[in-house]
Length: 322
View 1 (tube, rainbow, N blue to C red):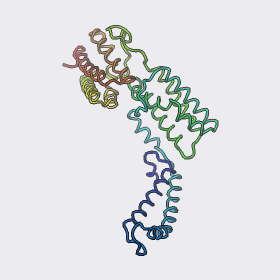
View 2 (view 1 turned 180 degrees about the vertical axis):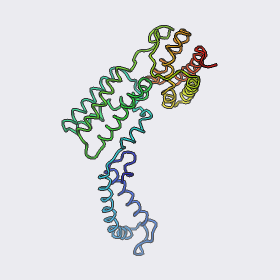
View 3 (view 1 turned 135 degrees about the horizontal axis):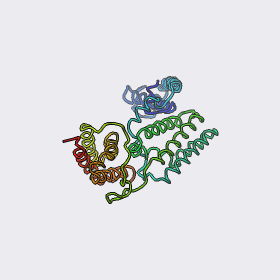
View 4 (view 1 turned 180 degrees about the horizontal axis):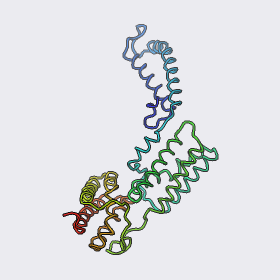
């Protein structure tokens, strides 16, 4: 019965689907089968005979569907926690194309807390209405991909909370306290995201803005030739994907260690070639900004190609690659 919930279908959805399938099968069997009582197919006499003959089958179908409904309801619906964790290895698809701004995040935090308050008070209809009408749920989806470039662990935690929230609010019998808990979790993660999310626009001039000092390393991984070469290859792929119009795939190629190494290498590179380090920093911050806001594929493609070249040059400047 659990297999009936693939895709998060509720027990009610399962019931409707099963009944529709059964009645479709009956209709097909009568439409293509022998003509009852010698009447012309689809005549009034044929239709009456069809209805009389189908009545016992319809009763059996309804009974069997009811059994499936009960079994499906008892088995529970939606993704398991393990499924949710696996899904959140990749970013959630954005719900809108709107830019993530500080004010939009603040409103989303308040909106999620309003949903939590309604659920905690037992006002399930209000909680569901707020879920459908405010921007909080959209923000939680829209911020996932760009947030992974800044704090991948936080983004995965937020993703899992969002999917658990969706599972709770779509249940046949909504658990108010559980829904409130997940809404509060999302609000908390969005607040943290507001603290780590960079809303500034990078300065175009070398040495200005965010790149006047080294950006902090995000891992303790050593800078190796294989790591630099792999990151440069993936960054070029990100540019090619963006040029082909696949922004989400480009963001995934740029994410992970491809992005991490550009932060990790900044400090050491400043000591070897400060101008090169600043140039790489500006390109990477520009990419982060594009993925997180306007998502202009042409700009992403140009900067990703430049970033790959600068990263390879950085490896040579540090004596890591030949």
